[in-house]
Amino acid sequence: MLMETYIYKLSFLGPVHFSSDPLSLRKTEVILHSDTLFSAIVNAYLHLYKVDESFFRNPPFTVSSAFPFYKDKLFVKKPFLKLNISEDEREKFGKKIKKSKFISMKLLEKLFSQEEISISEESFLDGGFISLAKNSDSPIDEPIYKEFERPRATISGINKSTIFYTSVVKFSNNAGLYFLVSFKEKSFKKKFDSAMYLLGDMGIGGERSNGCGLFTVTSSEFENPFLRGEYFMNLSLYHPTKREVDSGILKNSHFDLITRQNWIFSKRAYPLRSKSVRMFVEGSVFKSTGIEEGDIVDTTPEIVSQTGKIKHRIYRNGKLFKFMIPKSAVEVNYD
Image (cartoon, rainbow, N blue to C red; front, top):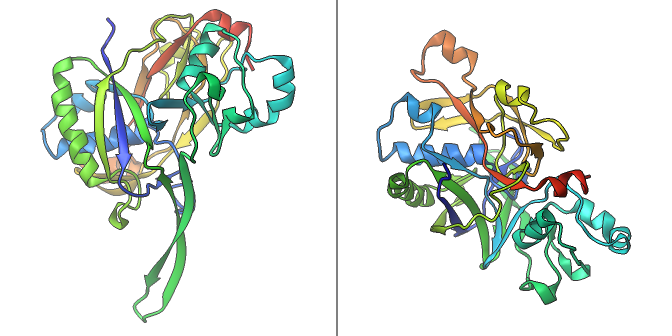
């Protein structure tokens, strides 16, 4: 059964800090990974509604990671596929393509449909973005975001101060992050929206006590053009079940891995480090076997199990949000 999909756009009121290293404030990412986004939404939801353990093991919604947008232009993580461009363009722009991190949704549609793509110098935008040529796609005439460092100071008990720096990202006024979400039941959307409005006031990501991560949010239905194919690309972090791996999803796959571990901050838990878990990064490409859904991983620290100080388990969301890809786009033109 196909679930209705919605797009949520986050317009930030100030800078954001999405840590790529839980031990360092000098490293930040532009995207917000789906596991972190899911945890933040659930934490806000718990301030409004009561849930039981089944809510965490079988959540009523599935989210993608949050990617940049500029006005009505959406970007996604560049998939592990070659762009179907001419050999002359590949020779001319190969290095720039390799360094790029994001492609526009319209470019993704052409890639999956195997339409010929034409790119130029104007297709490459600051921050690692690739868009279509200006004559075929609305132009972007300013940086989508800027990354900079902010000085901070700590003061010890003997009045000595120590300066350190925090990296943050500031989106332009016309830009922000968006994510896609599918609900098992449409009636849940009203509660989900309430949690999102609260989360906007609470803030998302790190450095919230210093004004980071506050946002306003809008939502609308999303018409998914990627519903059919023999392969799929994940728009979320993806942790497959053993059954999914055994079914053959790794055949002709193209992927990278990321290790996820962070501090646990929730309405129901003390600050602790979770167990680490490896997941497939966004933009990975796999063979579809029709059963792929991903998994919710138990990352409860051993000390919790041993001491019993926390009365619930700690979970990390590895559920799959995917776009389907035709076989021709993978087996004929892959990297």
